[in-house]
Image (cartoon, rainbow, N blue to C red; front, top):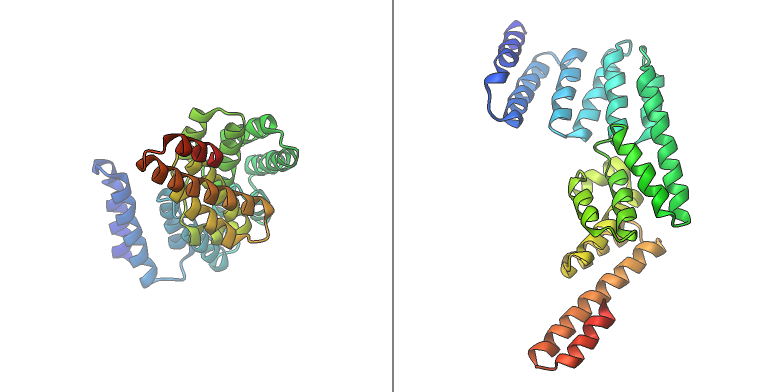
Length: 269
């Protein structure tokens, strides 16, 4: 095991000479994997691997490594705190609070931040029910400023509020900043209902950008995840109607029926 430890020390001592940060972390990850193969019972290796996975944005795998480190060494506070921090960054306030509370070394700052996150999200939920987009805008921005930098839900709430307030340029800029997870990954982290909401907001963005085929595909994915949602189903119908109107309008336009095409386009939009 000494050889693996020496390799890790040498690797990190030379890391600043590397050009590509992602490449550095990938190499570190490979070294931690090798160390774990030799001694899978050492909690430190799983905890350090977790830190590398976080740097690569692989939160689901990072959670697994944290949980393994906690299982191997429950009295160590670092993996508890790291797990709580991951959940905080992902916008999962309750899990962040629970992980922090069960840590041997409770982080009072993280506890305060996670509680603030929970309060902001609660206000967003209440405001969305009454369509108070200005409150959602304020609360979601406060959440992002708090350090919740990897939570698609928060960015989607902010995006939706901007869209409803007709601040289109900011809408697209915010949506572009949102961390993107593939569908399976999103389902595992956030569950189908929340993932459906993320897809629904994506559909609105595609419609606003005249990307109608993408809007239809995305809305249908949302419907499969949350088929009982009237809101999601309404977005599916709208996406299909707009896409159909575009297709019909294009055919009329090609046939030089410009007035009819204009009417169809307007009806669809």
